Image 1 (tube, rainbow, N blue to C red):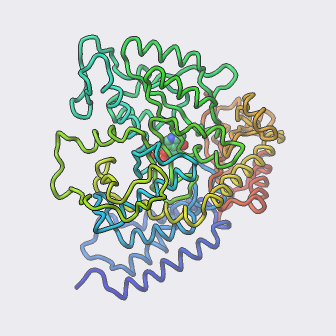
Image 2 (image 1 turned 30 degrees about the vertical axis):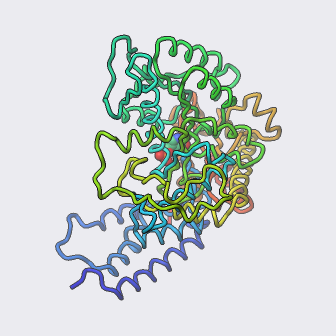
Image 3 (image 1 turned 90 degrees about the vertical axis):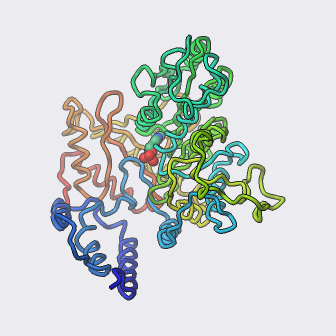
Length: 535
Ligand SMILES: *Cc1c(COP(=O)(O)O)cnc(C)c1O
């Protein structure tokens, strides 16, 4: 007997669709967290070990919907989930993701006479550049990854090989990917360092994984500008770049666009890029979510020089509201990607060869410069970590097409306005202190705005029932807010003290409906009221 009965699939599909559509309609009302009891019963419903005999599709689907799913986050993609930076799922992206699963195509080799999928992936990556007004020809090395962490791994790996290939102490074109960790008389130890300011935690993971090391000797903090804790002190940066060049040590400068606690921006990305160019540093820009803030015209100045990066990290599954997982990696040095992922020393098996032979049906005469034709798309497995890969481009393409530039500009702008209205309340409330730094350039440039973009950083005030003198205050208050199950915030630490963040990145968030609910909870919790909601 076949394990999958046909009629079972149809009826289960109906059940799934009905569940999804009911849920979608009530996403703004569903309590965000499951109850403690739902979590417990979900876990205790799991089989202790794998049963010999399967349940079949219908019974399994029914079991998931009724018993398992009630125990997970009920509305992480709803309009009032403000933890981390998670984004939601646009309707077109959600449907396309379901279709991608249904086709289950493995997008790893460019077989363009057999499938359009690699060309579709390439075009989706190009459309993201269009969204950001970046010329396609700038970043011809591009690939879709599992997220910004994977992009940061690719960025540091490319930087590592590129920088060592130029080292004055090593044979020309030395490659770590090919030759392993370098050693040579006069080669400084460590041979490479990372200079940064508030790098995202994933940079340390990436540095550890690509063999650079993640300790303080490798990832070095450049002092902040005395007037702006999110901007490099450019004088210090130049000194360091110069000194490292003199000893022949490679430098990767990691520049964040959109700091994850504050949503803030340093300024002078163009000057940092110039310094990197002058002293031979590799500029890796981590713009996971903040790279899209520039869709709001008044923030364009903070993102417009991303095209000067050697490598660029963006996330699809955050502010673009594409489902997990989806990251977007770009580099101007395509060869550094292929050196690593298509090692000439390990010639790929013949069955992985692409069939790039004919001229391309897509490359019309009027395509923008830098548009890659179907036959020329590198096989994804030769520019990326995975061999077998999900067709992540389909939901990305669908979402971009369904919304257009205008639709995305609208999401970004609405989210930022929403966050700013909450920040205004926080700043005026006796129960809270707003912590977002507001350096002079933000004040001059953004005039009315008291926070730069979509993240509100705050803590309970000294006059509140949760005074910051008690180090557990912010964590206790975070729990109180989240126990309301009507909004979700996350705890963090800023300037060594605990704090709370509200990060707004979901297309569903609506000022009219949601700010009332958010302000009501914040107001009551701030006065010490208990707003826990069971049920
Ligand atoms: C979220 C984030 C990351 C990590 O991204 P994942 O998609 O979770 O892997 C890296 N850098 C920045 C700036 C981020 O905001």
